[in-house]
Image (cartoon, rainbow, N blue to C red; front, side, top):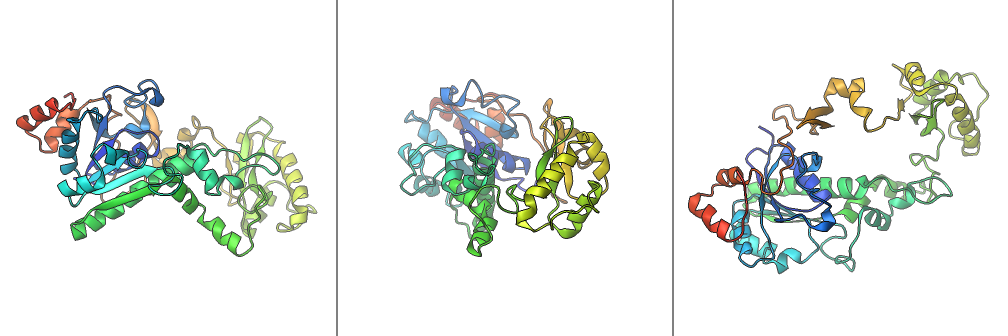
Length: 384
């Protein structure tokens, strides 16, 4: 019984941040019903949505509906009337053109929280333009600070725009709007844009920039790899150790564990001496394997950790003890987060195939035989 138990979420099929937000809500106990296209479109890849190994698709049920058919609108509106939350990730204006925009939805369901996920936002000169994570974080200023000095910016996977600045921002906005709707009886639109969220994730940088503590050159600042004591170093076996010894007491332990505590080195914050420190650190780390360095730093506060691969991370003792990764639906995946003391989250069934478990969802949402028959005629597809 998760913290969102009893909340009904109607999700319109999309990729990236919108299904990630729905996964977060489903993990927390929400009843998520996804409206899938009857056939997977080419731009989503072959059956990408509906594969049981689609982690972001876990925990929901599915019905199919071709929203381009005029009669399908009535079926979609029936589902909206029974929902607490809508999640859609189309370009601005698409839902309105389909006859499913917020005004129509609110007329049927005044308490509805209408969550909208886009890259550029619902308004602005770029609102209708195509884009991806890299485009959004570049225009937000974030990409300019990621990478090595003198080299091109490095794409940080698609975590900053799609998932951190997009999906998580949408999930936060939806839950906040739910609280308001339950108090006031009035729903609202949540306009979540990846470009906005990416900018918010970099809030600390804007503060440092304002007071002159941020240099707009890659790898020249405290947390961007500019300092020798906040970076990764190669080990003798071709692996890496991540060093984050920012505070003086932690930096002292780093020097001690590296055998450099009594060496003549430039002061920690002497920018002119950073190349010397980096060279010495790199040379020392190359003298042992990653596992050997893990033993050296075990139990210390030097803020040093091994750089693990995705396949290695779940077996680390810390993750094992906390249960940070679990085997669910036949494969290892991240456990739900954050953790609730009274209403723990849980992983539901694997991502459904198109229409899978749809009939049970419709029953749970209060549709009787007559309604199901009517919606079948309107093009709604579902399986038991």
